Amino acid sequence: MTVGEMSQRMSMREYQNWMRLQAIQPIGDRQTHILMATLCSIVASIGGAKSTPAMFLPQPPKPQRDPADVTADIMRFFKPLIKKG
Image (cartoon, rainbow, N blue to C red; front, side):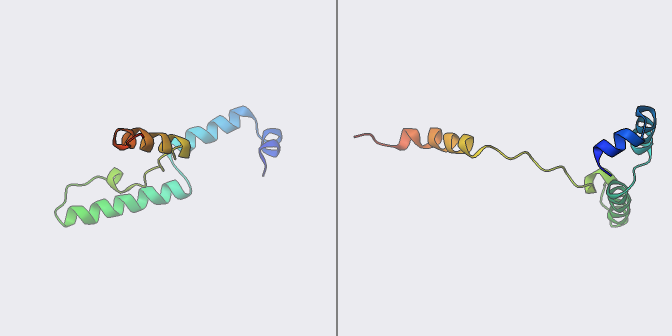
């Protein structure tokens, strides 16, 4: 279903109800991650480690830097080493 179709078929109130449910009872990949993280934490605890499920949840990817910013940082780093002349 597209966003346009959803906005025609679902009221804002229903959408907000689904979002509330998702916040307290995740479905899909998030729920699977939580279940597996819990299992990993239990296994680690049996092995003597102090762990929490949060330690085993996937982390969101870090935003990529603009290549121009990376180049500028490299140039600033090496500028004192470059001899002019």
